[in-house]
Length: 188
Length: 199
Image 1 (cartoon, rainbow over the protein chains, first blue to last red):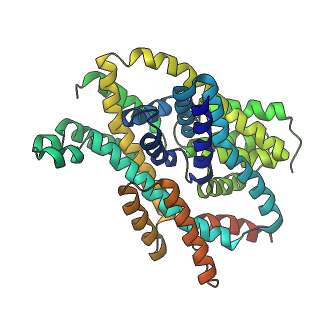
Image 2 (cartoon, one colour):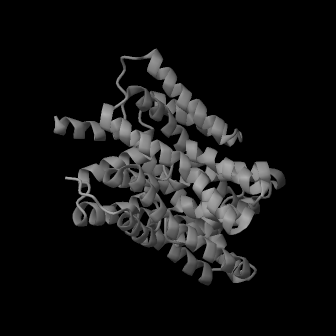
């Protein structure tokens, strides 16, 4: 029970600061891994993949996933609700505020500063996943063995997926389905 | 223009949208336009686009925020509540169901291999998200500075909370240090132009 409350509180905090959609939550998941060891890094990418394959907003999928893992169905409900409370309050008060006052320069300035930071955080999360799958810089730095640096097969897949991702930008589902098929056929 | 719509109906509309929504936040737009703009005539296409831009700028999920904005437009706070419950419910149920399967099947090597390939696809999706956000997030000296500082801090494993909050504080600092400067912001332009039209 304790860990459910703790997770809900962590997710409440994430809900307060995660700007720019579901993927912004990923860096915070890494932070949770470091801090609590409720799940591991490999499970984060698994969560992202499953979230892409299931209906609904990715952020909710991931919040539910983490919640189920830590505290079952109840944990999941708590986590998801805690995650949505901040944005619920923000959207409602913002709607009211904008109806009354229009724009506010201070808010715009804050957002102007926040967004590049969010982009950097997501970028680093992407690089972290890449480091574990395609390249293995962290392992290479330890072993100095060039075979550890890069998996050719994974790199080719990365190129192919990138080309496809650019083509089907609006529909990430296609990429995930193709990746599932590729994973069935190609032994990595 | 706003006509009363029952909360239950609002919930049903968003539940339906949540059920067919896959992937990132922008996937919700065509559904919202079809349901809320064309069928129910609660908001206009322009309003939905503005809400979308605002949702990207504020904390929370883009799909969740857009739903709440449009729900609020329809029925105020209760409407926003019905909308967010509706859009989140399918996602919650789906994961609860999938999770019980997942723990059974992840033992097989073939499934593990599929997840390894999926990891690469996830990388690509994350980088595409970065590209998409980049356009209206990093475009001048101030934002480039914050981007680089946040990048270095994130690589050094500094808590993301600290990074985001410091970036917000820098924004506050800019507001008071350069009160005359205009804020260059894609989302602001979007909502501003709507107001100019109204006047």
